[in-house]
Image (cartoon, rainbow, N blue to C red; front, side, top):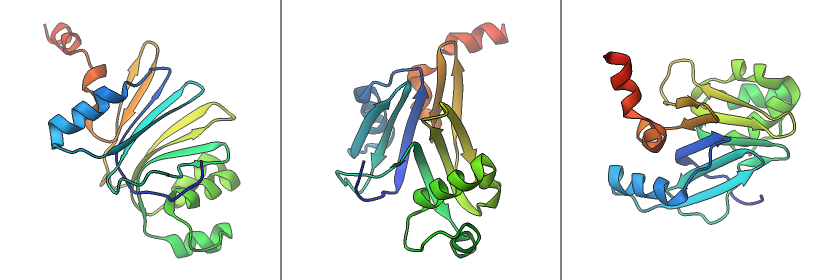
Length: 171
């Protein structure tokens, strides 16, 4: 997937749980009265949908065998360029992909900034849910019998949440 790296406002990712694009777009329209470009893709058992407020047709979230989906703003780029010997003038998602390739998931300990993202290693069939240390950027997730659902905002989980489960737990 070649193209421009975009800043993602909302995202929904699942493992083993199909996403219905229309449902995602309907929720955004209802909650925020937003009509934005949403991109839907599937790689193996990973499904993801995200919204590009700039309405850029092509995006780059897939770096070789690593997919990074999230709202990311790294503040210590100069330090990371030096420590990981990364060439400058690349976007945050690509910085993280280089770091992950060199140091595995422990690389997130070196990140300073505001971020919430899902990192999916397609080859190892692993996924990681990552949030900044202070919790500026939100991320929510549900574990279902058949997989996981991860979202940037809680309202995106509505189609996967069973309110009857809460009633049964309370009574």
